[in-house]
Image (cartoon, rainbow, N blue to C red; front, side, top):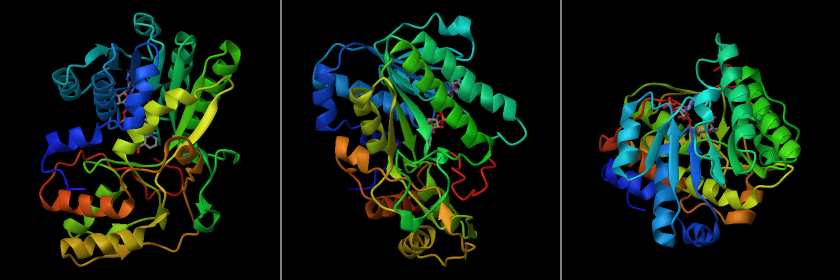
Length: 341
Ligand SMILES: NC(=O)c1ccc[n+]([C@@H]2O[C@H](COP(=O)([O-])OP(=O)(O)OC[C@H]3O[C@@H](n4cnc5c(N)ncnc54)[C@H](OP(=O)(O)O)[C@@H]3O)[C@@H](O)[C@H]2O)c1
């Protein structure tokens, strides 16, 4: 895969729907609301949904819903021809004015700044989902969760699977389990078809674990990590899986891990990037037995394996940084191993 030369090319690459998604959209009934669309994933997910509708030749409305605290995202969505609705989902009066659609992707939430503002994190990650799950009780809902609901595990385990018992570390991860339980509860109570996506680190070149590591190397700073291993998934694949997951919503709720096929070592990835960039590597990784690792075998069984594998992503990321590609300046904090964000 050629590294995109600019953001225009990158946005289109990430938003390319797979043939499977286009076929699915031909038979998916109803319109789609994307709640929390103005974030790192939501913008490109909305564009992919729009491209899938166009390619499928169907008449389906896509509503991108967010507070739009950063108006740049709203401008981008509107330039792409996507209908935007400004709404604070934590305000029930505003929520009740949203169009009720047959399909919903829920991705609003809060992670960083949790340490010290725990109450706000719980309101955003548990209260807000409860309002939305109740309001959209007659929809099918794919809701984002995170691989952080599992305990940190050893590489030898092959990664956590959906049947493993959640043991979230720290209040952010605990609030995410709360979000899952709220969706699970309303799915049971109202027979709402739900799927909870446990994602580990999406990578879009402007942000992600590879960007975090690569920028440090390029700027000749020390790469410090409290974990030795990690998983990543190309954002284009994350978007495809998310929209295809609308076909696997069930009551009681279904759970699905989504990440790449490989468990990557911080050291190996950093060495490869330093080699591509022609930089000397300064690495500080205390020996750590466990990391957040997901096993996505179930998702691969549903949708197939990712279209871009880690080796290619590492090269693309290094080239993107070397050519001066934009960074969102939103670090993943993948290196955190104590749940404090
Ligand atoms: N990115 C990853 O690799 C990753 C990994 C694991 C899990 N996840 C989960 O996946 C979801 C999406 O990820 P992301 O990286 O795109 O997150 P993000 O960048 O934080 O985007 C979420 C967006 O939701 C919107 N939002 C927040 N509160 C809202 C409210 N009260 N009402 C309406 N909109 C609200 C915000 O936009 P406005 O300020 O404009 O409202 C925000 O930009 C999150 O729940 C995250 O926990 C992501």
